[in-house]
Length: 175
Image 1 (spheres, rainbow, N blue to C red):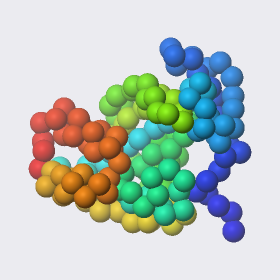
Image 2: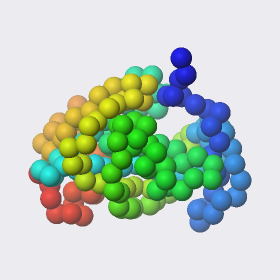
Image 3: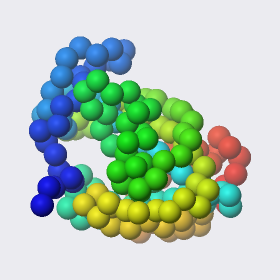
Image 4: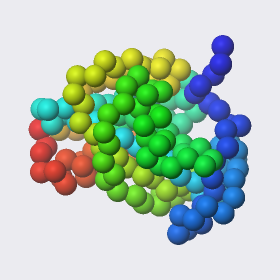
């Protein structure tokens, strides 16, 4: 069986601190060397009630296995744009696509890696969700109360909870 979860051989564009492409590297190298800056995306999907779709990451994932996170995320492959990647990841992880709006970009520095994180959001309109079990354990909808409980229980990634709170604050709709 083809493991879609941990793919260290995939090629990524390397960028400088101004987000200009300067080379390429395998994903495994970029994820283990903070000097190799690359790009990643994350998506927040919100329904008509203002709830956010969370995904529980596969327990097979090397990073944050089993943790709750944003609706969808992934690495930007060599030659692809962040927006193309966001649509590819939606289809790959959740089995559908929707219109996305760019929300924010920032340089995220971690002990093991550095990447530009591109954040997008979209409206969920009752599309059929078909999760990719190699990538996603499950999905659930969260309002502010549920998000706070996941934070308290340390079951959601810190960057995901921050992103969702920033999104709700920007739209003035914390439900």
